[in-house]
Image 1 (cartoon, rainbow, N blue to C red):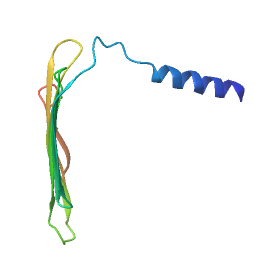
Image 2: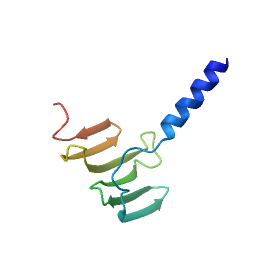
Image 3: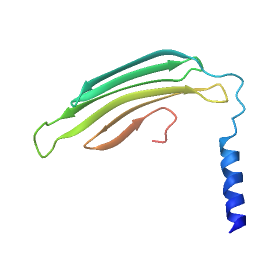
Image 4: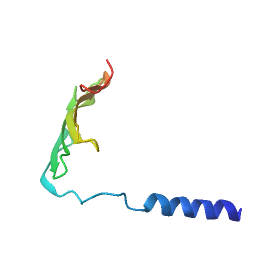
Length: 104
């Protein structure tokens, strides 16, 4: 039992250790708009080349097919310097990502 506690403590310390990062990313843009119960939208951009935007809206309000439809995109710069972009839709048809780096 003592071994499990010590192992869990060491694992927690290891996971909490900071990653080797040359600098902290700074927020360059941050927009949030909570439209209320029918949807939302947000966007942000950071100095390390990461950006994301997303918007959602409630569809078929008051019916049995009521659901939320989400559209968005995210891009980032990988450790190798390559920029990746991903566009996605999540709705009644499931999560549908699109990106040049994804298998077809």
